[in-house]
Length: 142
Image (cartoon, rainbow, N blue to C red; front, side, top):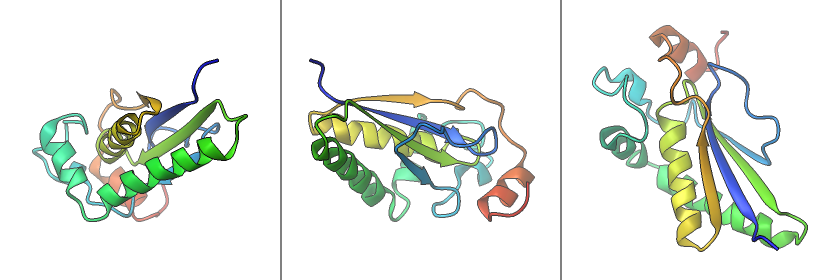
């Protein structure tokens, strides 16, 4: 029998809705600094070191990563029937915050001995126009 696995998907609300099969969805659009606003980071992703550091050094992000990994462990332990847990992390474009946070969650899970995988749904999509980010970051109309 295979051990339980956690799949963490990063995505951008500006491209499509959150994955419907997610057990846990984190919406990080309004809570953390957006690297998209810095022209030097706009065309990079959360896998590039400057963006990753920017996101992970944002107050509250490391705690979110740790708490989400803990929640995943608890959910896996709560039910022997759970064979796969899906976590979705969404920002506006799916290239910066969600990517760095998803990678952080997977790293924390692997450090805890949990089989975890990451999928970056929108990381290769075109960068959204700045106006889109401003509207979606503040919850305004599309």
